[in-house]
Length: 296
Length: 296
Image 1: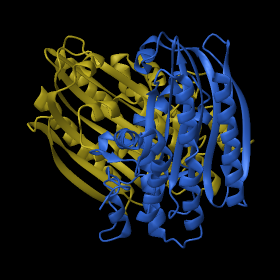
Image 2: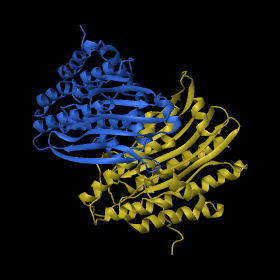
Image 3: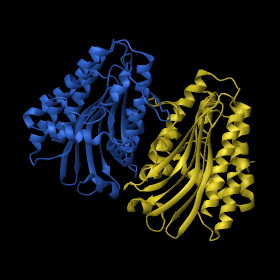
Image 4: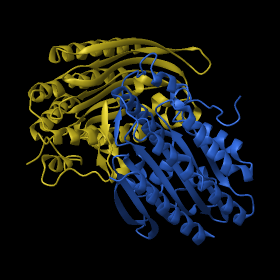
């Protein structure tokens, strides 16, 4: 099952790569194949990191990795596994578009084993910078569709709303959410695997149609300024709260692959507020949990 | 003694403010007086935050605060105090210049009480972006001078070299160090207070002469690009490793005052390296512990 998962996520990495090249004709890809060594210099797996730069995607990372070894006991407790020997594989991606009218997206699908325990985790969430509500509905409804056979959308949407939060910013979300799940283990590994595959198939149709619809939209300096500041909040979330980043740092992962998630250009301003009455002020209201599928 | 310390650091905040205005004629200051409430809504002190923007200082914060209350037990252990009731006051500053030939500086001087235990902490460290070695020597020699009566330079320099490190970046330092101390408590509070005052008096002569020497130097796009990437490392350090930031987040401090330290414009690039043979490649060698005072 582990081998099957590895093959599946590598294939998904290829599909997403192909879709990005179709959309962005200027896209340049750097591929790095890397090996990981544990603290004692023993082989600990590796990965296939792909970094992209183009005219639609200012900076993007679509990474596959499969790592194993021993982790610090204290961190192993946080992981809620069995013992501190681990095996983990997955795809992790983050796409930062150049045009502020196109949302940033993040997705991750992973399988983890610690001792006798095995489980899946992952999800996908959107970070838009302009109040195109129809895009947000499209993204969420696509997640709802792939979740429907498993009746898991509501629970996974709620976990996502609770997870991607800058707790130090009065509960402000990083973006508009999506789905998030962890420790998925029903007792039937094959069934869980099929569910993760089904959920991951939502990624391409949930996101790329939005990119195609918005990538040629004219944008203003104000749009860009707002995006750069929101990217600052993205950095805050990833470095202060994100467990995936922490997992990478704690397990001595390849640092450039882990921090590929950081946006290429960022602004931080003291007491930043979007201009009064702007579309960006309106956008701020969306960084709170909200229903996009069942509303009146 | 606590009142005396509060008065001293408020005065130091004023002196530094005055010096900045002398140097940067375009400098605009925003002052925010704020009150802190603890988790139960009880008064928990407050502060005087000053944010600056000008043509020499692109963004700078010079903050005074005096806060008290109860902290989470787990975090109280990290603080190594007595119980989890705390009182803390200090000055904390960070100056991000516009010109990449002028170094960024950070300094902090604080007094903390937890139960029966009282101690001082602080220090000052420099983050340059151009290999002007004479500036680094000036900064360190000024620290050496103020430390001399207390014979504390070597120990405090070493702690600084060990503290401002991006451990996830193979031990690369944030800048070129300076001095750092914590839990300063000799058993004679008055004597310790005098020492902290003496050390803090090194700040103005250690830094501002460098600003005046470099602020009108011509700089290139490459200089700026390198600075923006090094500011990225600054963000990584502050959000992943810095205990001062963590203290602020854990004690529910005023978030805009805590994160005033983040640089105004930042770049993150996958596998960033400065151009081969450039002054910036040379600069990279300085982000490792190095002797600036006793060398041959």
